[in-house]
Structure formats: C-alpha cells, structure tokens
Image (spheres, rainbow, N blue to C red):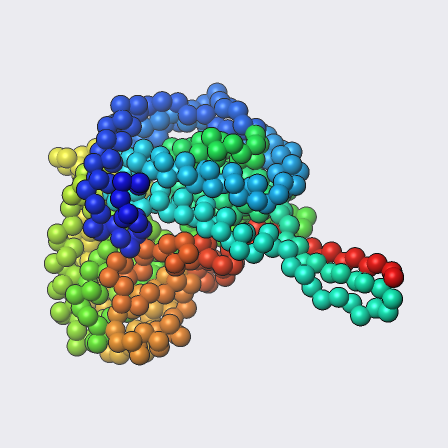
Length: 527
C-alpha cells in the first residue's frame, strides 16, 4: 500500500484509488495461474500430509479446484496439541517485547502480500475484491493492535498495595500470565481476520496456538499461517490442521490438553462447544462469537438517503453472510414508503456475479447448503408476506456452476414468524413498519442474538438508541453500513446474549486479558 496515502478500511473501501484495482488484477492473474496445488498442514514447523485429501472449490464455479488439502485425523489433531504444549514453555518465557517484534513482522508480511491473499480470498469465499482487500488489511491491523495493547499495558504487570506490616516490606504484583495451548476455530466468512485477530491476541500474550480453519475456506488461513512462519515464530508455536469438524474439530474440542478455545461460527455449534468444554475436569476459557440477527431502526427524522444506502450495504455485503449483516429493519410509518422505495431502488442496482470483477458487489453464497437454505427461506417468506425485490436463485447461464442468489427484500411478514428472530445467513432482508420508536426497540431486542444494531434518526434519538439497544456494537446514522464495518481500534467487535460469551469485543481495550489469567505475586522481606 506504499504507493498511496489511502488507508483501506471497511469505511473507506467504497471509493478506492485505481492503484488498488490495478494491483489486485495483477495478483489475480498470478494466483489463477497457480490454482490446484496441494497444501499441507503445519505441525511443529513442518509440513504434514495425510492419506486422505479434500478439494477446496470456488463457490462461483465449482468446476474450479482452488487447492487440495489434508483430511486430517483425530490423532493428527492431538499431535498438534502436544506440539503446542511443548512449545509453550519457551514461548511464554520469552520477553513480551520479543513476541511483539515477531508478530509485527507477521503483520508486515500480511500487508506485503495483501493483493495475493485478497485474490485468493475472492476466489475462495466469493467476497468481492474490495471486501477481500479490506479483510486482509483488517488482519494486519488486528495483529498490530494486539501488539499495541500489550505495549500500552506494559505486559500486564501492575504494582498493588504494600501490606502495612511492622518491620517488613511486603510487595504485591498483579501479573497476567498465559494459559497454554490455545485452539482457534475460524469461520468461512472472515477466515483470515477471524483467525489472525484471535491468534495475535493469544500469541502476543504468550500462548501457543492450534488453528483449525473452515473446511469450506482453508486456503487463505494457510496463507496467514505462512506469514507467521516466515516471520520467524519458533516451530510449534503456530500449528495449522485441516479436516472435518466431526473428526479433527471434535478431537480438539474434547481434549483436556487444550487450555483455551476461541470459536467464531453458528450459535448451535458454539453452544455445543461451550457445553463440551464444561464437561472437562475443570473450567477453561471459551471465547465465542456466534452470529446475529441484526436490526436497524429508521426514525421519521432520519436522513433517508443515508439510511437506505447504509442498510443496503449491510444487508447484502458478502451476500448477507456476515454475522453482523442487517437482516431486519423497523421503519416508522410516516417514512416507510419513501424509505422502502429508496432501498428497493438501490438493491435493484446491485450487480451479482464473479466476485473478482471490479463492478460486482455480490458474489456467490459459500456452498450448496447455503444456496438451498436461501431458496427455502424465500419460499417460506413469499408465502407469508410480499417480495419487494429479488427472490430468485440464479442457476443458469453465467451462474450455472456457482451458488448465486439475488438480493431479496421481503415485507408484510407477520411478527410471529420464526425468521424475524432466526438467523438465515443469506441475502434476505425483512422490513416492517412500526407506529413509533418504542415499538421498534421492543422488536429489535426480541431476538436471542445481540451482536450489532443500526439506527437512523436525530442526535437525541441516537442517544436513546444507545441506551436501550441490547447489542455489543451499535451504530447511528452510518453511511458505510447500518450494522457492519467494525475495525480494530475504532469499533471493537463482539456481541451480547446469544452472540457472544465474554462481553468483551475483539480489537478493543479489553480483549487481550481474555487470553490471560491473573497471578498475584506477594513477596515479604523482613527488615
């Protein structure tokens, strides 16, 4: 990014300089020419192969094999845990300043390789080119932010009070120390950022890590693991294992040698992990981010142009497959028709297609399961309400070999319908009129989830919104996205209720201590 002063974030990606497109296209050509390679797991700093393999294919064209990956075994997963535990003593015993130096090198490599990794991201996940570039840039920032936080907190060593004991000096220290071998299970939708962020937090605080990427998108996570290795992190500190959740994932989750877990994914899987870990011989930390059913409220005092654009961007970015995606909107009745008209008009201009192309906003959903879920939800909602826009599964012509869906807006669905509160994770947005803001807030808080929420209205109403909304990330009058676009150091990201387990947000002031445990060191010297 040295050619320009432009700072790429999710807030700035809508008007990038041409150099970003030029370099992305050059990287895309290079990456396409090298598709189909086999990628190993990494254990103890060495490539490891398994007897069984699986292919990662492009969701935009399932005939294209992006790479061949290892179908790991339960024993192989446990080998990675043992390796991480062996590496822990040396890594945790190193000065935190030395760990910071290595992790900043890894972040620099991510930045250096941003275009190659972003091209792989677009092919692998179906994320459009600017969102792909944004995620890789975010990953570097997450790693650097973790380094910033341990520096600002001086390694999390704090002097406590001295006991008033006669003829003695009693010194007390609060020292935060790492747990051990930490498991990171990352999702397909943000595979590198939601691996890199937790990994950086675990590593800079002295833990070693075992990374289990999503089976739908392991490629970019392997590219991140390469950055950690090439930065010079010692062998065994970062381990990368691939395979099915039912085999590799289950072996890792049920292991008492895993000292902590960070999981990002569905509520159902997250709660299963939480319960499984509770059955071990003692409690260990589990950090969960489990999705959302994110509402936006539109007041009669809203700037409707901004509200419609921000809502559209959050509803249909990454095909609605963000845990922060806007999936339901409550609009005060006096502006309902005007707002919906603007929203439908903007949605109708969305280009669906090959996500590597400059003009495309929406690529494919991730797999056949998501594609079938989209069709099932459209059918169910069409029977219950009215489809204002979209509603078609795109499966012919240029779309025939991928999982493409049209962005869909549905209205007039009864409030007791299950899809008002259940996560769909596809490009479907539900809208409803409300009599007033109190009714809107009641509906917004109804869901089990509490990840993100958006509001458009007056400044005074925004204060009311922040006070009353039950969500971990709340946005008011945001043009770049009603409920999406968090960035480390700006909008730390995490959820309440069924969306998260810690109550602390990644990329913020309170995240690193989740990877540490407190030890009080009390020394008394008799005088």
